[in-house]
Length: 237
Image (cartoon, rainbow, N blue to C red):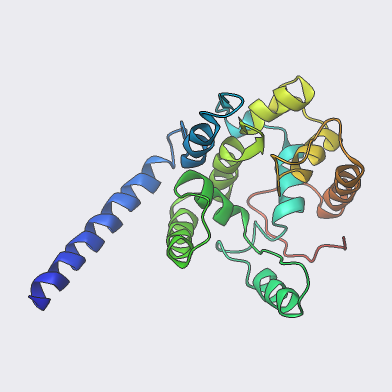
């Protein structure tokens, strides 16, 4: 009986690995049409005051402003070009910060956020964190950093029922994702920690201060080059 059970577990695990690798390989080239979060948000809205229909359209990274690419790196993950999916320095700082009893701080990289949005669901559990680590390892091995950024910017939530850079640029600034200025890109990046609460335009005093900080970080970071890594420390909050 135990041997049968172990054999069953082995088969399930093997098939999961095979299918997950195929899934990640497919998304290396195929545009992500929909994410679990889109379905979750849509189901949450049914029966409520309003029936929310999500706004989402895929655009290649060549049609997404470099300003927005750089803004999210400077805002969310300044070592994105250097790490292999996990920023150990950021994790150590977050653990130390949280241990001191201060407001909880996360250390999710852009790679981890991409995985959470594209392959998983928004739940805090050790099981989901384990899957997140597994899929993060996979995309870092199979995709390029540029592809991770492309999927990230086309899939994440950038407003209430607003998903992806093109939909966000149109919703917040009435233009395409390729024409975002530094300050417009920074405004969108500034709301990412809680895009259903904050507004990119008109921005609150808090978002304005975040936006100014992000633009300053963009200046310190320099030109964005996915083939060139330069690990650095953020210059302050």
